[in-house]
Length: 187
Image (tube, rainbow, N blue to C red):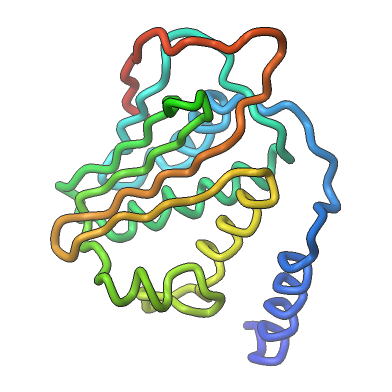
């Protein structure tokens, strides 16, 4: 059993690392379809089952540290699963916006969040609506995605659900890639 002091020390260390402007880990090319498949595969024993929708073709690579990117997107997927009843829906979708930036969209039919919580408390360290957890997952996600040149957007309605959109710059190797359809996979 961890003591309160030990947990506090761990949290302070993590906060210091998150507040550091540059990443300690080197950036590499990360193929988002593989990352999203791994995230959903790790959670396949949980209900509801995540509906993973991936583009059928194209280069969906970003520059990031693979494990850290998987962890922060995994926070968002896990939050969606925990907020959604077993007979609800969690959808993870990969697509591009009008500026050809990559979007990872995590949508659920869970309990949702109030406008006040979204405005005043979400993405602040140690703020949470859950009975367990430390309230740093969304904070870490936003910090890291912004470090990569992206952003995170939240839309939520109590009793209806939440949609989180993670926007990342596409790693371009030559010309821009066009969206060429979507295939659906149940993870």
